[in-house]
Image (tube, rainbow, N blue to C red; front, side, top):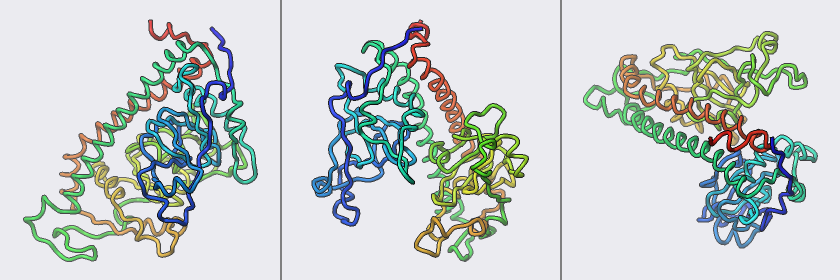
Length: 410
């Protein structure tokens, strides 16, 4: 085992800065051609695009700064404090991002990123403040990471990056496959292309093929809601799987893709028994409906969820794809009668959602058409999970010097 020296982040950077936010009340400052990164987008990832953009006017009237591609971004505020990302494009950021431009003569930017990922738990523990836990730029500047030779850094980064490259490729393939499934769903159940020669009847949602119905969701599905044990008693929770039960949150749904099979937290068997928590079977379709509405995924395995997620049991295995795509295409904005739909929607409203329900024969035909697409997505998703597990196993051993590069490459 070779133990690496340590170095402060500021010693390997050519520039360290935070960003800025144009005044949110000035519409002319937003919607331009300048990518603008928010900390909620930072989640141990590569950034190719941003959720929001700003205009030249917004840039010139704020503290936003251009950050070059291949910079390392560290979130400083709130729930994402200590999380890290690599930007693959030049962009700007808000003030809650600490932007590190790595000096390529001293360090490999990928290595610096992986070193910060590896030390996330310690870095995030440094956050302090009142209601919102924050890091500051000085803490990040002085944060120490391992410092092997530049050649060794590149070799370590090459190995870890190759795994992330494959993970990223699989995600792009899955995105493309889901787009294909979405296009087929629209053709069948929104444009009615295969049924245009048949008879149509009027309904509350417009004209639909004869024999189809408009039903409330709970007339089709058994729907129940997850549960959270008392947070003050840590005995009910675990951060490792072991014999524990996957416990899915809204953030897990944000990160998983079409299928969800991993969680950031687990419930112990004692919690499951004590609080009569229902564990749902694989292929149950999950829908977030509190705070963030409309995140959808299919359970890859038996799991449970928190109370912000509704679980749709399939009455028939052939309903899997139809159910997922129906919920994906649902207009959730019409569920809320107040200005804040995030607080207006409850489980009763979810169960009363109006759904266009074809006859079973047409659902089965659709299932037979798109099942191969979903099976491929699941296979790629399983491979992503295995690659993530391998990367996360190698990462601390490579960073500590416990595992020699030669051991892997020989």
